Image (cartoon, rainbow, N blue to C red; front, side, top):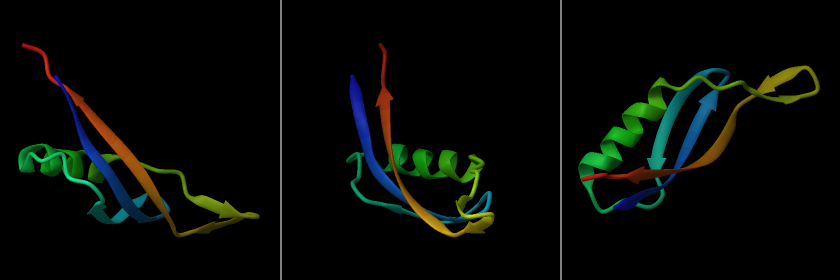
Amino acid sequence: MSISAGGFLVFWSGECVEKIEILESSGHKILDNESKNTIKEWKFKPAMIGNKPINDVIDIPIRFVLDN
C-alpha cells in the first residue's frame, strides 16, 4: 500500500530547519508526525543570491510504501 503524507513547507535558514507545516495530511497522524521528525533531521544547503545565503521555503512531498 502506498500512502502520501502530502507536502510539507519547510522554512529554513542555512542548514537549520526552523519550522515545518503540513500542507496535506496523509490522513494518518502517526505518518504525519514521523515525516515531520524525519525532515527535522535532514541537512540542507542554503539557497544563495550571489555569494550570500538566504532563508528559503521548500515544498517536500513524502510517500510511504507499506509492505505486508
